Amino acid sequence: MSHNAASQTSRDPSPQELRRVILASIAGNALEWYDFFLYGFAAALVFGQLFFPAGTDPLIGTLGAFAGFAMGFLARPLGGIIFAHFGDRYGRKNTLVATLTLMGGATFLMGLLPTYAQIGIWAPILVVVLRVLQGIATGGEWGGAVLIVTETAPKDRQGYYSSFGQVGLSGGFLLAAAAFYLAQRLPQEQFMSWGWRVPFLVSILIFAIGVFIRSRVPESKEFENTARQGATQRLPLLEVIKRHPREILTAMGLRFAENGGSYIFVAFSLAYAKYVGAPGDTVMLALMFSFLIQLPVLVGIGALSDRIGVWPLYLAGALGMCLFAFPFFWLIDAASTVSIFMAFIGANTVCFSLMNAVQPKLFSSLFDTEVRYSGLALGHEVASVFSGGLSPLIATALLSIYGASWPIALYLIFLGGITVFTLIASRVSRHWREPALAT
Image 1: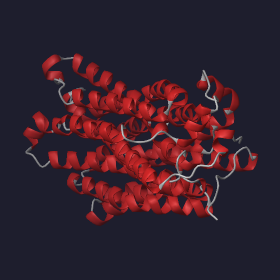
Image 2 (image 1 turned 90 degrees about the vertical axis):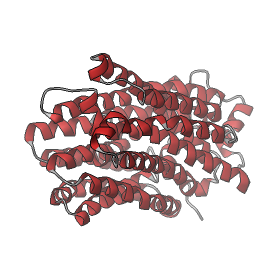
Image 3 (image 1 turned 120 degrees about the vertical axis):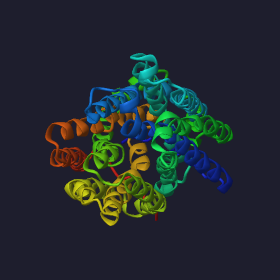
Protein backbone atom coordinates (compact mmCIF):
# COMPACT_ATOMS: atom_id res chain seq x y z
CA MET A 1 0.00 0.00 0.00
CA SER A 2 1.43 3.37 -0.98
CA HIS A 3 1.25 6.57 1.00
CA ASN A 4 1.27 9.99 -0.56
CA ALA A 5 2.76 13.12 0.77
CA ALA A 6 -0.49 14.42 2.02
CA SER A 7 -1.01 11.53 4.35
CA GLN A 8 2.49 11.92 5.73
CA THR A 9 2.12 15.51 6.78
CA SER A 10 1.75 16.34 10.44
CA ARG A 11 -1.83 16.25 11.56
CA ASP A 12 -2.47 17.19 15.15
CA PRO A 13 -6.14 18.11 15.51
CA SER A 14 -7.28 20.06 18.54
CA PRO A 15 -9.62 18.32 21.02
CA GLN A 16 -12.41 20.72 20.01
CA GLU A 17 -11.93 19.91 16.32
CA LEU A 18 -11.99 16.18 17.02
CA ARG A 19 -15.19 16.50 19.05
CA ARG A 20 -16.93 18.38 16.25
CA VAL A 21 -15.85 15.83 13.65
CA ILE A 22 -16.92 12.89 15.82
CA LEU A 23 -20.29 14.49 16.60
CA ALA A 24 -20.91 15.14 12.92
CA SER A 25 -19.98 11.56 12.05
CA ILE A 26 -22.21 10.06 14.75
CA ALA A 27 -25.18 12.34 14.13
CA GLY A 28 -25.01 12.26 10.34
CA ASN A 29 -24.57 8.50 10.18
CA ALA A 30 -27.37 7.93 12.69
CA LEU A 31 -29.78 10.13 10.80
CA GLU A 32 -28.85 8.75 7.38
CA TRP A 33 -29.16 5.12 8.48
CA TYR A 34 -32.35 5.78 10.43
CA ASP A 35 -33.91 6.62 7.08
CA PHE A 36 -32.34 3.65 5.30
CA PHE A 37 -33.31 1.09 7.95
CA LEU A 38 -36.93 2.23 8.01
CA TYR A 39 -37.52 0.53 4.69
CA GLY A 40 -36.12 -2.74 6.05
CA PHE A 41 -38.63 -2.76 8.90
CA ALA A 42 -41.48 -1.66 6.66
CA ALA A 43 -40.61 -4.35 4.10
CA ALA A 44 -40.78 -7.05 6.76
CA LEU A 45 -43.91 -5.78 8.50
CA VAL A 46 -46.02 -3.57 6.22
CA PHE A 47 -45.02 -3.08 2.59
CA GLY A 48 -45.70 -6.62 1.45
CA GLN A 49 -49.38 -6.22 2.29
CA LEU A 50 -49.87 -2.55 1.35
CA PHE A 51 -47.67 -2.12 -1.73
CA PHE A 52 -46.84 -5.61 -3.06
CA PRO A 53 -49.99 -7.74 -2.59
CA ALA A 54 -49.78 -11.15 -4.27
CA GLY A 55 -52.61 -13.57 -3.52
CA THR A 56 -53.01 -15.22 -0.15
CA ASP A 57 -49.39 -16.15 0.63
CA PRO A 58 -47.90 -13.36 2.81
CA LEU A 59 -44.36 -14.55 2.02
CA ILE A 60 -44.85 -13.69 -1.65
CA GLY A 61 -45.77 -10.11 -0.78
CA THR A 62 -42.80 -9.91 1.59
CA LEU A 63 -40.63 -11.26 -1.22
CA GLY A 64 -41.78 -8.37 -3.42
CA ALA A 65 -41.06 -5.85 -0.66
CA PHE A 66 -37.55 -7.25 -0.18
CA ALA A 67 -37.04 -7.07 -3.95
CA GLY A 68 -37.66 -3.35 -3.57
CA PHE A 69 -35.22 -3.42 -0.66
CA ALA A 70 -32.61 -4.91 -3.01
CA MET A 71 -33.16 -2.11 -5.54
CA GLY A 72 -31.82 0.35 -3.00
CA PHE A 73 -28.61 -1.66 -2.87
CA LEU A 74 -28.37 -1.77 -6.66
CA ALA A 75 -28.37 2.03 -6.61
CA ARG A 76 -25.68 2.33 -3.94
CA PRO A 77 -22.67 1.89 -6.28
CA LEU A 78 -24.08 4.62 -8.53
CA GLY A 79 -24.44 6.94 -5.56
CA GLY A 80 -20.97 6.01 -4.36
CA ILE A 81 -19.42 6.80 -7.75
CA ILE A 82 -21.25 10.13 -8.09
CA PHE A 83 -20.62 11.45 -4.60
CA ALA A 84 -17.12 9.99 -4.30
CA HIS A 85 -16.08 11.82 -7.47
CA PHE A 86 -17.05 15.15 -5.94
CA GLY A 87 -15.72 14.13 -2.52
CA ASP A 88 -12.27 13.29 -3.91
CA ARG A 89 -12.17 16.42 -6.08
CA TYR A 90 -13.83 19.08 -3.94
CA GLY A 91 -13.94 17.79 -0.37
CA ARG A 92 -15.81 15.50 2.01
CA LYS A 93 -17.90 18.05 3.93
CA ASN A 94 -20.26 19.45 1.27
CA THR A 95 -20.72 16.00 -0.25
CA LEU A 96 -22.03 14.69 3.06
CA VAL A 97 -24.58 17.51 3.30
CA ALA A 98 -25.83 16.56 -0.18
CA THR A 99 -26.23 12.86 0.68
CA LEU A 100 -28.23 13.71 3.79
CA THR A 101 -30.50 16.06 1.84
CA LEU A 102 -31.31 13.42 -0.78
CA MET A 103 -31.97 10.75 1.85
CA GLY A 104 -34.21 12.97 3.96
CA GLY A 105 -36.34 14.02 1.00
CA ALA A 106 -36.82 10.47 -0.34
CA THR A 107 -37.75 9.08 3.07
CA PHE A 108 -40.26 11.84 3.82
CA LEU A 109 -41.98 11.29 0.46
CA MET A 110 -42.17 7.54 1.15
CA GLY A 111 -44.31 8.33 4.17
CA LEU A 112 -46.80 10.16 1.93
CA LEU A 113 -47.25 7.44 -0.71
CA PRO A 114 -50.73 6.08 -1.49
CA THR A 115 -51.07 2.30 -1.30
CA TYR A 116 -51.71 -0.34 -3.97
CA ALA A 117 -55.42 -0.29 -3.13
CA GLN A 118 -55.51 3.44 -3.92
CA ILE A 119 -53.39 3.81 -7.09
CA GLY A 120 -52.67 0.25 -8.19
CA ILE A 121 -49.36 -0.61 -9.86
CA TRP A 122 -48.04 2.93 -9.39
CA ALA A 123 -47.72 2.28 -5.65
CA PRO A 124 -44.91 -0.32 -5.86
CA ILE A 125 -43.30 1.64 -8.72
CA LEU A 126 -43.10 4.80 -6.60
CA VAL A 127 -41.82 2.84 -3.60
CA VAL A 128 -39.01 1.42 -5.70
CA VAL A 129 -38.14 4.84 -7.21
CA LEU A 130 -37.83 6.39 -3.76
CA ARG A 131 -35.89 3.36 -2.54
CA VAL A 132 -33.44 3.86 -5.41
CA LEU A 133 -32.96 7.50 -4.34
CA GLN A 134 -32.31 6.26 -0.80
CA GLY A 135 -29.72 3.88 -2.18
CA ILE A 136 -27.97 6.62 -4.15
CA ALA A 137 -27.75 8.75 -1.00
CA THR A 138 -26.49 5.87 1.12
CA GLY A 139 -23.88 4.96 -1.48
CA GLY A 140 -22.23 8.34 -1.03
CA GLU A 141 -22.70 8.55 2.73
CA TRP A 142 -20.56 5.91 4.41
CA GLY A 143 -17.24 6.64 2.72
CA GLY A 144 -17.42 10.37 3.37
CA ALA A 145 -18.51 9.95 6.99
CA VAL A 146 -15.66 7.51 7.58
CA LEU A 147 -13.01 9.64 5.91
CA ILE A 148 -13.83 12.89 7.64
CA VAL A 149 -12.91 11.10 10.90
CA THR A 150 -10.03 8.83 9.86
CA GLU A 151 -8.34 11.65 7.94
CA THR A 152 -8.54 13.96 10.96
CA ALA A 153 -7.79 11.58 13.86
CA PRO A 154 -4.22 10.74 14.99
CA LYS A 155 -3.01 7.71 13.05
CA ASP A 156 -2.42 5.56 16.13
CA ARG A 157 -5.97 6.27 17.41
CA GLN A 158 -7.88 5.82 14.15
CA GLY A 159 -9.59 2.66 15.34
CA TYR A 160 -10.94 4.35 18.45
CA TYR A 161 -12.12 7.57 16.83
CA SER A 162 -13.51 6.03 13.64
CA SER A 163 -15.59 3.54 15.64
CA PHE A 164 -17.77 6.44 16.78
CA GLY A 165 -19.06 6.76 13.22
CA GLN A 166 -20.17 3.14 13.42
CA VAL A 167 -21.91 3.98 16.67
CA GLY A 168 -23.95 6.38 14.56
CA LEU A 169 -24.86 3.57 12.15
CA SER A 170 -26.07 1.37 15.00
CA GLY A 171 -27.78 4.36 16.57
CA GLY A 172 -29.67 4.91 13.33
CA PHE A 173 -30.91 1.35 13.43
CA LEU A 174 -31.90 1.80 17.07
CA LEU A 175 -33.88 4.94 16.26
CA ALA A 176 -35.65 3.21 13.37
CA ALA A 177 -36.43 0.14 15.47
CA ALA A 178 -37.73 2.26 18.34
CA ALA A 179 -39.90 4.31 15.97
CA PHE A 180 -41.49 1.19 14.49
CA TYR A 181 -41.86 -0.43 17.90
CA LEU A 182 -43.78 2.59 19.18
CA ALA A 183 -45.88 2.74 16.02
CA GLN A 184 -46.82 -0.91 16.51
CA ARG A 185 -48.30 -0.03 19.92
CA LEU A 186 -51.25 1.35 17.97
CA PRO A 187 -54.21 -0.93 17.22
CA GLN A 188 -53.41 -3.05 14.16
CA GLU A 189 -55.94 -1.28 11.94
CA GLN A 190 -54.54 2.16 12.77
CA PHE A 191 -50.95 0.97 12.40
CA MET A 192 -51.63 -0.40 8.91
CA SER A 193 -53.68 2.66 7.94
CA TRP A 194 -51.44 5.54 9.07
CA GLY A 195 -49.25 4.55 12.01
CA TRP A 196 -46.45 3.08 9.89
CA ARG A 197 -46.12 6.44 8.07
CA VAL A 198 -45.14 8.43 11.16
CA PRO A 199 -41.50 7.19 11.37
CA PHE A 200 -41.02 8.18 7.71
CA LEU A 201 -42.57 11.63 8.11
CA VAL A 202 -40.47 12.39 11.20
CA SER A 203 -37.39 12.15 8.98
CA ILE A 204 -37.91 15.74 7.80
CA LEU A 205 -37.11 16.99 11.31
CA ILE A 206 -34.16 14.63 11.57
CA PHE A 207 -32.87 15.89 8.23
CA ALA A 208 -32.87 19.51 9.45
CA ILE A 209 -30.84 18.57 12.54
CA GLY A 210 -28.35 16.59 10.49
CA VAL A 211 -27.75 19.34 7.93
CA PHE A 212 -27.17 21.87 10.72
CA ILE A 213 -24.57 19.65 12.41
CA ARG A 214 -22.76 18.72 9.20
CA SER A 215 -22.59 22.30 7.95
CA ARG A 216 -20.45 23.15 10.98
CA VAL A 217 -17.89 20.35 10.66
CA PRO A 218 -14.38 21.20 9.37
CA GLU A 219 -12.97 19.65 6.20
CA SER A 220 -10.72 16.57 6.46
CA LYS A 221 -7.09 17.52 7.22
CA GLU A 222 -5.63 15.01 4.79
CA PHE A 223 -7.87 16.20 1.99
CA GLU A 224 -6.94 19.83 2.68
CA ASN A 225 -3.25 18.90 2.46
CA THR A 226 -3.84 16.98 -0.77
CA ALA A 227 -5.77 19.86 -2.33
CA ARG A 228 -3.15 22.37 -1.20
CA GLN A 229 -0.44 20.36 -2.97
CA GLY A 230 -2.52 20.11 -6.14
CA ALA A 231 -2.64 16.30 -5.90
CA THR A 232 -6.38 15.82 -6.42
CA GLN A 233 -7.29 13.68 -9.43
CA ARG A 234 -9.46 14.81 -12.35
CA LEU A 235 -11.03 11.32 -12.63
CA PRO A 236 -10.47 9.66 -9.24
CA LEU A 237 -12.63 6.63 -10.10
CA LEU A 238 -10.43 5.62 -13.04
CA GLU A 239 -7.30 6.37 -11.04
CA VAL A 240 -8.28 4.14 -8.11
CA ILE A 241 -9.16 1.25 -10.46
CA LYS A 242 -5.76 1.57 -12.13
CA ARG A 243 -3.81 2.02 -8.90
CA HIS A 244 -5.65 -0.23 -6.40
CA PRO A 245 -7.50 -3.09 -8.17
CA ARG A 246 -6.57 -5.72 -5.57
CA GLU A 247 -7.49 -3.46 -2.69
CA ILE A 248 -10.93 -2.88 -4.22
CA LEU A 249 -11.48 -6.64 -4.47
CA THR A 250 -10.27 -7.07 -0.89
CA ALA A 251 -12.77 -4.50 0.36
CA MET A 252 -15.55 -6.25 -1.56
CA GLY A 253 -14.73 -9.63 -0.08
CA LEU A 254 -14.66 -8.24 3.44
CA ARG A 255 -18.23 -7.00 3.08
CA PHE A 256 -20.00 -10.32 2.55
CA ALA A 257 -20.02 -11.51 6.16
CA GLU A 258 -20.62 -8.11 7.73
CA ASN A 259 -23.19 -6.72 5.29
CA GLY A 260 -24.91 -9.87 4.06
CA GLY A 261 -25.11 -11.40 7.50
CA SER A 262 -26.33 -8.26 9.22
CA TYR A 263 -29.34 -7.83 6.94
CA ILE A 264 -30.39 -11.42 7.58
CA PHE A 265 -29.97 -10.91 11.33
CA VAL A 266 -31.85 -7.60 11.22
CA ALA A 267 -34.35 -7.30 8.35
CA PHE A 268 -35.10 -10.93 7.44
CA SER A 269 -35.21 -12.05 11.07
CA LEU A 270 -38.44 -10.09 11.59
CA ALA A 271 -40.14 -11.92 8.74
CA TYR A 272 -38.72 -15.25 9.94
CA ALA A 273 -39.91 -14.71 13.52
CA LYS A 274 -43.38 -13.90 12.21
CA TYR A 275 -43.31 -17.06 10.07
CA VAL A 276 -42.44 -19.38 12.99
CA GLY A 277 -44.82 -17.66 15.40
CA ALA A 278 -42.24 -16.06 17.69
CA PRO A 279 -43.65 -13.08 19.63
CA GLY A 280 -43.11 -9.97 17.52
CA ASP A 281 -42.81 -7.60 20.49
CA THR A 282 -40.07 -9.71 22.04
CA VAL A 283 -38.16 -9.92 18.76
CA MET A 284 -38.23 -6.15 18.29
CA LEU A 285 -37.19 -5.51 21.89
CA ALA A 286 -34.34 -8.02 21.57
CA LEU A 287 -33.16 -6.33 18.38
CA MET A 288 -33.18 -2.91 20.02
CA PHE A 289 -31.44 -4.19 23.15
CA SER A 290 -28.70 -5.88 21.10
CA PHE A 291 -27.98 -2.63 19.28
CA LEU A 292 -28.21 -0.55 22.46
CA ILE A 293 -25.48 -2.52 24.23
CA GLN A 294 -23.57 -2.62 20.95
CA LEU A 295 -22.88 1.12 21.17
CA PRO A 296 -20.16 0.96 23.87
CA VAL A 297 -18.95 -2.40 22.53
CA LEU A 298 -18.12 -0.82 19.16
CA VAL A 299 -15.97 1.86 20.78
CA GLY A 300 -14.18 -0.72 22.93
CA ILE A 301 -13.41 -2.90 19.91
CA GLY A 302 -12.23 0.16 17.97
CA ALA A 303 -9.83 1.05 20.78
CA LEU A 304 -8.63 -2.57 20.96
CA SER A 305 -7.85 -2.51 17.23
CA ASP A 306 -5.35 0.29 17.88
CA ARG A 307 -3.48 -2.16 20.13
CA ILE A 308 -3.70 -5.54 18.42
CA GLY A 309 -4.69 -4.63 14.85
CA VAL A 310 -7.87 -4.98 12.81
CA TRP A 311 -7.12 -8.32 11.12
CA PRO A 312 -7.66 -10.70 14.10
CA LEU A 313 -10.81 -8.88 15.18
CA TYR A 314 -12.41 -8.93 11.73
CA LEU A 315 -11.50 -12.61 11.34
CA ALA A 316 -13.05 -13.43 14.71
CA GLY A 317 -16.29 -11.73 13.66
CA ALA A 318 -16.51 -13.57 10.33
CA LEU A 319 -15.73 -16.96 11.88
CA GLY A 320 -18.16 -16.25 14.70
CA MET A 321 -20.93 -15.59 12.19
CA CYS A 322 -20.29 -18.94 10.50
CA LEU A 323 -20.38 -20.78 13.83
CA PHE A 324 -23.50 -18.94 15.02
CA ALA A 325 -25.54 -19.40 11.82
CA PHE A 326 -27.48 -22.50 12.91
CA PRO A 327 -27.81 -21.57 16.63
CA PHE A 328 -29.28 -18.18 15.68
CA PHE A 329 -32.34 -19.77 14.09
CA TRP A 330 -32.61 -22.49 16.74
CA LEU A 331 -32.80 -19.81 19.42
CA ILE A 332 -35.56 -17.92 17.57
CA ASP A 333 -37.44 -21.19 16.99
CA ALA A 334 -37.43 -21.77 20.76
CA ALA A 335 -39.52 -18.56 20.97
CA SER A 336 -38.71 -17.83 24.61
CA THR A 337 -37.69 -14.36 25.76
CA VAL A 338 -34.26 -15.55 26.89
CA SER A 339 -33.51 -17.48 23.70
CA ILE A 340 -34.56 -14.61 21.43
CA PHE A 341 -32.40 -12.13 23.33
CA MET A 342 -29.47 -14.55 23.17
CA ALA A 343 -29.91 -14.89 19.40
CA PHE A 344 -29.67 -11.17 18.71
CA ILE A 345 -26.94 -10.44 21.24
CA GLY A 346 -24.78 -13.19 19.74
CA ALA A 347 -25.40 -12.10 16.16
CA ASN A 348 -25.44 -8.31 16.43
CA THR A 349 -23.59 -7.35 19.60
CA VAL A 350 -20.78 -9.88 19.18
CA CYS A 351 -20.27 -11.08 15.59
CA PHE A 352 -21.40 -7.97 13.75
CA SER A 353 -19.60 -5.59 16.14
CA LEU A 354 -16.23 -7.31 15.71
CA MET A 355 -16.35 -6.56 11.99
CA ASN A 356 -18.25 -3.29 11.95
CA ALA A 357 -16.18 -1.47 14.56
CA VAL A 358 -12.88 -1.85 12.71
CA GLN A 359 -14.16 -1.52 9.14
CA PRO A 360 -13.52 2.24 8.79
CA LYS A 361 -9.88 1.93 9.85
CA LEU A 362 -9.34 -1.18 7.74
CA PHE A 363 -10.92 0.17 4.56
CA SER A 364 -9.31 3.61 4.83
CA SER A 365 -5.87 2.00 5.06
CA LEU A 366 -6.28 0.40 1.63
CA PHE A 367 -6.28 3.55 -0.52
CA ASP A 368 -4.32 6.79 -1.07
CA THR A 369 -5.93 10.05 0.06
CA GLU A 370 -6.63 11.53 -3.38
CA VAL A 371 -8.63 8.46 -4.48
CA ARG A 372 -9.73 7.13 -1.10
CA TYR A 373 -13.38 8.19 -1.28
CA SER A 374 -13.70 6.51 -4.70
CA GLY A 375 -11.94 3.37 -3.46
CA LEU A 376 -14.27 3.08 -0.49
CA ALA A 377 -17.30 3.71 -2.70
CA LEU A 378 -16.36 0.90 -5.10
CA GLY A 379 -15.27 -1.63 -2.50
CA HIS A 380 -17.99 -0.91 0.03
CA GLU A 381 -20.99 -0.24 -2.18
CA VAL A 382 -20.56 -2.66 -5.09
CA ALA A 383 -20.24 -5.51 -2.61
CA SER A 384 -23.38 -4.34 -0.81
CA VAL A 385 -25.42 -5.19 -3.92
CA PHE A 386 -24.44 -8.86 -3.74
CA SER A 387 -24.32 -9.17 0.03
CA GLY A 388 -26.82 -7.06 1.98
CA GLY A 389 -28.97 -6.22 -1.02
CA LEU A 390 -29.69 -9.81 -1.96
CA SER A 391 -29.45 -11.59 1.39
CA PRO A 392 -33.00 -10.88 2.71
CA LEU A 393 -34.42 -11.68 -0.72
CA ILE A 394 -32.50 -14.95 -0.98
CA ALA A 395 -33.31 -15.88 2.62
CA THR A 396 -37.04 -15.25 2.06
CA ALA A 397 -36.98 -17.30 -1.14
CA LEU A 398 -35.22 -20.19 0.65
CA LEU A 399 -37.79 -20.07 3.44
CA SER A 400 -40.63 -20.06 0.91
CA ILE A 401 -39.18 -23.06 -0.97
CA TYR A 402 -37.97 -25.23 1.93
CA GLY A 403 -40.08 -24.00 4.85
CA ALA A 404 -37.07 -24.39 7.15
CA SER A 405 -34.10 -22.38 8.41
CA TRP A 406 -31.22 -24.76 7.57
CA PRO A 407 -30.75 -23.51 3.96
CA ILE A 408 -30.56 -19.94 5.29
CA ALA A 409 -27.97 -20.96 7.88
CA LEU A 410 -25.88 -22.57 5.13
CA TYR A 411 -26.19 -19.37 3.12
CA LEU A 412 -24.89 -17.40 6.12
CA ILE A 413 -21.91 -19.74 6.35
CA PHE A 414 -21.24 -19.22 2.65
CA LEU A 415 -21.22 -15.42 3.13
CA GLY A 416 -18.90 -15.71 6.11
CA GLY A 417 -16.61 -18.06 4.21
CA ILE A 418 -16.05 -15.48 1.46
CA THR A 419 -14.84 -12.96 4.04
CA VAL A 420 -12.63 -15.48 5.86
CA PHE A 421 -11.00 -16.45 2.56
CA THR A 422 -10.46 -12.77 1.68
CA LEU A 423 -8.80 -12.04 5.02
CA ILE A 424 -6.46 -15.01 4.76
CA ALA A 425 -5.64 -14.33 1.11
CA SER A 426 -4.87 -10.66 1.79
CA ARG A 427 -2.49 -11.60 4.60
CA VAL A 428 -0.77 -14.40 2.65
CA SER A 429 -0.32 -12.31 -0.51
CA ARG A 430 1.16 -9.45 1.57
CA HIS A 431 -0.55 -6.82 -0.58
CA TRP A 432 -2.15 -5.34 2.54
CA ARG A 433 -0.68 -4.53 5.93
CA GLU A 434 -2.06 -3.46 9.30
CA PRO A 435 -2.66 0.26 9.81
CA ALA A 436 -0.57 2.02 12.45
CA LEU A 437 -0.86 0.67 15.99
CA ALA A 438 -0.74 2.64 19.22
CA THR A 439 2.61 2.66 20.99
